[in-house]
Image (cartoon, helix red, strand yellow):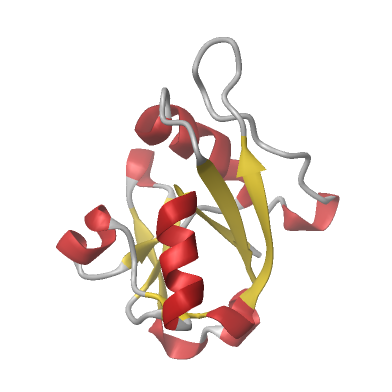
Length: 116
């Protein structure tokens, strides 16, 4: 399982379009940025603090094929990058990410098997 953080309006547009082509940074970079469960909280803190109206989209990697690449990024960690639009049938769930008192998006509890 991998995770995408985006604004609810971006996700609403994806649902209307039948696929998620990416947020602004994704379109600029040429791939959709994802995080693992272990990486998601730090991604949220670094890139999404203070931004209300976010959602966390859980995606089944087995549905993505060869266009999902694991590439070195922050601190040399391998991050999942998808080099095509995300088809909605790969989406397992969507959770709102409320802001905590410090302004950081609050991650839901991840299942133990989602930690990788």
